[in-house]
Image (cartoon, rainbow, N blue to C red; front, side, top):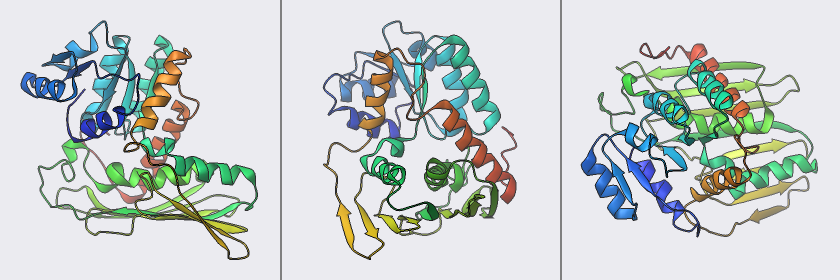
Length: 319
């Protein structure tokens, strides 16, 4: 649903999954839908989102529309009994997401956020190392994501009507890393620099936990930043190499300063892992993923809401 740039990446990821098939495509433009369907061999192309949601043979819909439409598009799918994998950010705010979760659970329809980094081998390895306890407790996380975006007030990056701003578009990744490793932060400090359109072009965040853990996170459309992450434990650290939120390598630095670089087998572009998880859940009759649960997505969105409140980022049309 929504054959844009991210949809192309997602479908490229599907190519290496033998039993995955792009069956139908929905767009506001019948021509765009037909072009996308022709490119990837989909059997059906629809010139409206509703037609796609009502297609009886479609099993699960990947919602790849712009941020502010995720809520209404996902709701439409759920109300038509369709399983949904919705691109991040799930919604603009927690209020919207809580309603989607309620509908999905009441109707017993599968729903998951497409935050692809959660399923990458590198992130799973970090979680494995944390859970082993060999390095002790996590004490500090540093993660960034930044690139130079051309300023255009009508572009989705800077347009508040399209949920623009660095935080929801790319800042969600550093926030995700901190929350998946440490849970709900006890305190948040954040500051943003705003564009003329009043969305954040840069945001810096400090998150703290009562057990003395801290995360220093940042996102920006103004600069090309290293896009790397470091997780520091009591007895060592893990360095996730650029671009840390994509398929990448990591370096484990032990207490004695010895280093071990861990590489992962290259398969596809990384988008396939979330699709594989959806397929596994549907075949098992699950309505939620235990890996990327709805409760976790609610926690992530709540944290983003807290950051927005702290730095004064408001979306008048949605908040």
